Image 1 (cartoon, rainbow, N blue to C red):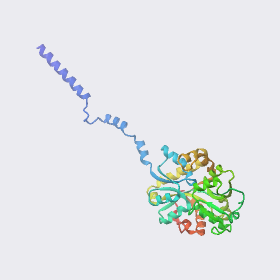
Image 2 (cartoon, one colour):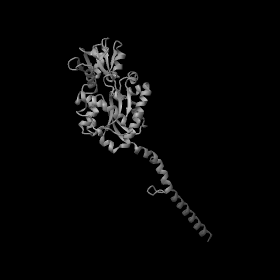
Image 3 (spheres, rainbow, N blue to C red):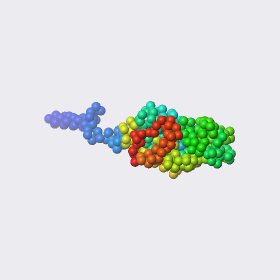
Image 4 (spheres, rainbow, N blue to C red):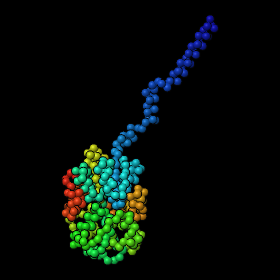
Length: 353
């Protein structure tokens, strides 16, 4: 009897051990408990605040033009690279405005910094499918001379002027200022257009006597050839012949469809674009390095020295409209084709204040 009782007790103890082992070794196919499930979730997926922040970032295809029109965006590009910008930007950098215009017209770029007259032409060409968001650059054009004969616009009579920007703001500004000073651009002066890089090289080498260039190309020439000087500031010359309007060279446009579908993203863009322009103006050395890094200007030293002369501005809403309307009226009277054949309608302007 004692042996039987001992055997039964031994069997019961063995069953208890086996049962305990099964409880500790849950099969991989089994559903985890509520407590273990929350542990797995927190270690394998992002927490709710992080995924929410990522989801809120809008993707904007942003077009930037090399030179003064693009300089104001350099700090924004830094924030975008660091991942601290409000939106996520896919950047397209172009040397010519025509490259960006074609991309905006084709719906491949959402927001773009381009010359102001090109913005009007694009609006007319697309029948109102492009709107202006903000102004970013005032006058940046200068007449340079390797010599000392030009003291006023009238002194340009009978001379040959090499220039950049055929079919864009520079050409129309030059023609307007010449005309308002009694000179016929087709008869009283000879104008030859070259691309910026070629003209900078020729002027710096002393192969050209008189030219019209924007900063920072002007800065490059002055650094390379100390015999060259600024003869005329065309922003000042504009004010002399037309005090009722401002010389506005650069702006930012947006596709109408993108604006309607992403108003918050566009509003955020304007906030950080204004911040970027202000940073560049206040920190020319650091901004100059960013301009070189993002290939907006070839050399940081040139960009740093040029920034104070770039006349960077930020204007939107009513202020933007007030600044640019007078300029468009002047260009239209001088040559309607300069702004696409007609002055933009009210729907061209965005109302962000």
